[in-house]
Image (tube, rainbow over all chains, first blue to last red):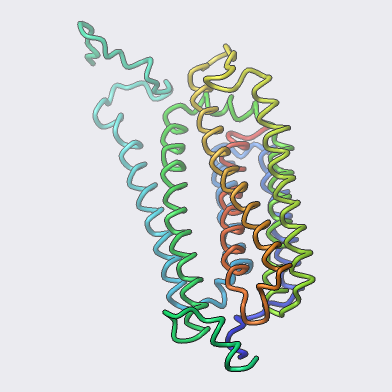
Length: 123
Length: 218
């Protein structure tokens, strides 16, 4: 019957994981008050990815899961990357390539794109 | 456990209890994969809109209450701990501990929802930051701020919906556990409910920095 019970984690491990997750939460909140420029977003996302990985590995037992389940998780991450990276590669390049004169500092909003007939948005 | 009792715990379509356990877990992971892409679509569109309308997103983000967001993150992390411990109690067949830990997890879930709705959403509604209901913000980049708030309400709303479903699952598990539905080696429902609960926690782990911490607070 022993194989019916999947790997039982020690309580200590769970508590340690919990403490680490709380520390990361405090860290990500704290870092938001320090000016790192564009790296604020990078750091925030890096911490979030670390936290998510810890939850998946320990709380969701991926550390001790079968290969099939690891494959499913890998597939989920892979497709999510396709979704976000390919969508963004379009938007991150679209305006500069198609409209080189587009002011870089100006935020692109719908209001700037005058689509009404009779007006042109010529370069 | 006698051979006879063992047989009653395995549904007809499975060879044995191990296969049944693996099938249940795999099914939940596949469901969670669809959930990743479900939220992923929103995260992707959020990223694109944030890229296109950054100034408004930054202003909108600064109107949210970081302290409540961080508190809710901590509440969910605590609930994940108690959920993980509940699964552990189920693995060991400690039904009393299981019930207690599920109740605590449920309470954390309800605290999260209370903070989300009664503290945050109510506050944002009263501030005039609720698009379509009460949106009176007229400062710089008003339309972009409105767009940010739409993302905020859709993302946190969808997450809250998952939390409400999770609380329903917790309640069901508590009732089942009290009725003696779980025993050592027979706890699939607790295990896969745990997977769901942790997943919802992970969604919030990403929502917190993406919504509350845009552009820093310095």
